[in-house]
Amino acid sequence: MTLPVIREDMSEDDMDKMMASACDASALLKAISHEGRLMILCHLVTGEKSVTELEELLHARQAAVSQQLARLRLEGLVTPRRDGKAIYYSLADDRPRRILEVIYEMFCSVPKQAPAGEID
Image (cartoon, rainbow, N blue to C red; front, side, top):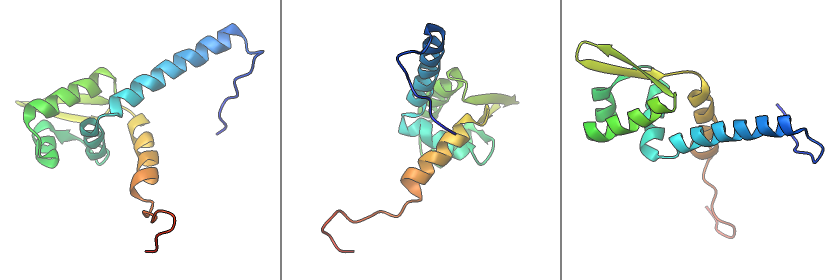
């Protein structure tokens, strides 16, 4: 995949489309920029989870988890499903998974390097 090149001779319509895409991307990045929401998405990558399961996995209170889930739902990143009294959440589509793969590659799977001048 190649990134677009912004040129001075781009049409106004193309610039408007690019700006709309930038706004969509910005909203998605803001939604995942909170560590609690990011961790919820990390857990949901492995499959559907109830609110109670997420509370236990995150060691967080129900109110905090529900607040973060509400934001993720508002941004269209998760989908709820009710089963009796329990509410289960899953990823709404493949976008969060794809972003998390890049984040994992950049921050979690790369061995930490010692700062310049230090020896391991």
